[in-house]
Length: 53
Image 1: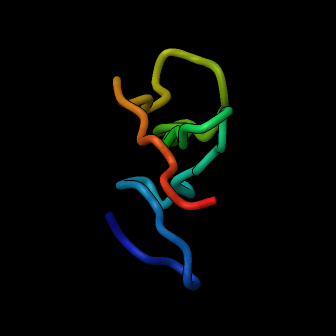
Image 2: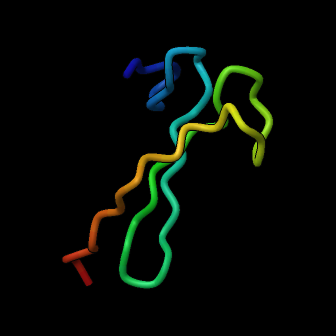
């Protein structure tokens, strides 16, 4: 991962997106073309349970 203007970005300099879903955080990227919801999105097959309240 890289840092651009104080934000985490992927290989294509797209922002790494952190979303809170219930008690979990989902990490994703819009991939090479920068469009959300298509086949090049980076969506790891895990989420992290939030332990802070």
